[in-house]
Every structure is written in structure tokens, then in C-alpha cells.
Length: 164
Image (cartoon, rainbow, N blue to C red; front, side):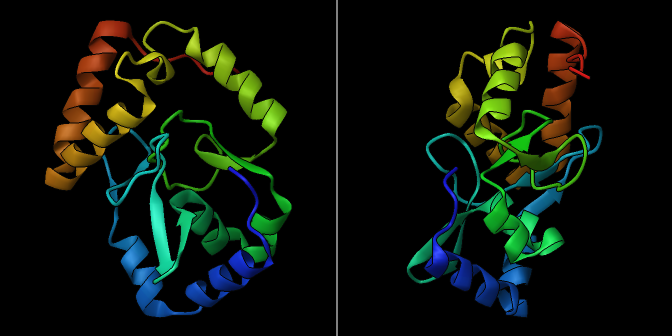
């Protein structure tokens, strides 16, 4: 995702300073047992990432808002790409194994390697947006439904192996 421009960074800083906006973000995040991810249940982008409205005319990728909550607006400004080490574009959990600072080259290289792994979420025939939409809808209904679907996939393909 592209870096935020100065007006976007100001809007992000303003939104982070408003408790009602932070609470609205948090209300769209659920934990799913067995996944370790914090799942986005709000609007989606064309690639299946969460979209979060900061205000009436400003939207940001949801995990960038989450990253700014943990590390601050200046950290978001300094990071060209946030990578999902869990390969879950809905994930909002900032930290090792989930959403981390990355680069375009590193993110693309890791994606290409993990896409080739049998059973990888990146190789899902539904595509990233359709997969994200289906899992988001399950998480909205009941996080246990997502856990059951993940368990079904693990039974079919086994655990996805880490790269490091």
C-alpha cells in the first residue's frame, strides 16, 4: 500500500486522538481461537484488506491504522509497506508473525514463496478478496465459524510452514 501523504498523516493523527474513532475501529476487530490473528469485520479493499474510514472523506487501510495505534503516526510515515506474516489480509494484530514493517521487495518475495506452498491461503482458488469476504462474513456471524473453517483447511492441507 502506498504511503500516506501529509494530509493523510494529519487525518490519521487526528483520528487516533479521538476515542470514539479508536473505539469504532476496535469494534470491527474480533479474535478467532486457534488463528492468533485479530480479524477485521468491516469494509474491504479490492485485495481483501480492511478499509477504515477516519472521517467523512478519508479512508485508510485498516491495518495501517492499527499499526499507528501501536507504533505512532511517524512510524507509519516511515514504513513503505506493512507485511502480513500470517498471510491473512484481514489481520489487525501488530507484531511478529502478523503485521510488521516490510518493504515492497521483501513483501513480494515472501508472497511468491508462500503462494507456492500447498494449502497456503495465498493460493486459495477464490482469490484474496473473495476469501477475505467469506472469512470476514463468518467472523461477523461468529468467530467460531472462522475457527471451524481454518481447522477444515488444516485437515486438508496441514499447517503452513514458516519461512524462517
